[in-house]
Image (tube, rainbow, N blue to C red; front, top):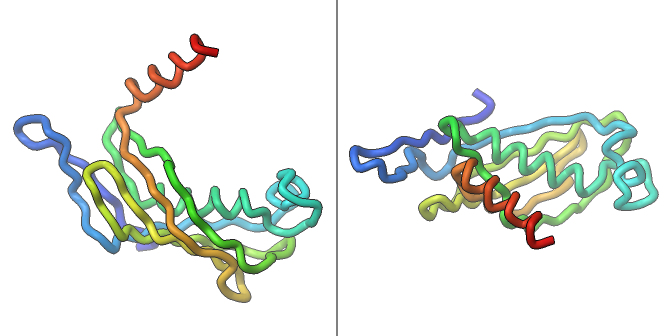
Length: 146
């Protein structure tokens, strides 16, 4: 299998319990096109794979580890990466994520990305598991402040 899944369950007292283990892996892949270049995404002027596109691919690899029940999701809260090599149009980029830390609802992943020639980036990514309804309600309440 390309990736393992993190499963959630609730115990008899309806207390949140993560049913997972360190070392779970996820993967995501894309091809460099005119839509995900630095020039197209506004992060530069060159037609090479954009750093924001690499970040999104790394996040997707982490999300691909998760199998959450209805009403729950995860949100990215921190990302510290290094983009070390340029990738030209037409190349295939693969990102991997490995779960390296669990602290209640906080998950930390080691992430990396590579193209056909080798590694293009790596770092750490943190996600929190959230309950969707209260999260969205809180986000909507910010409109009233603005």
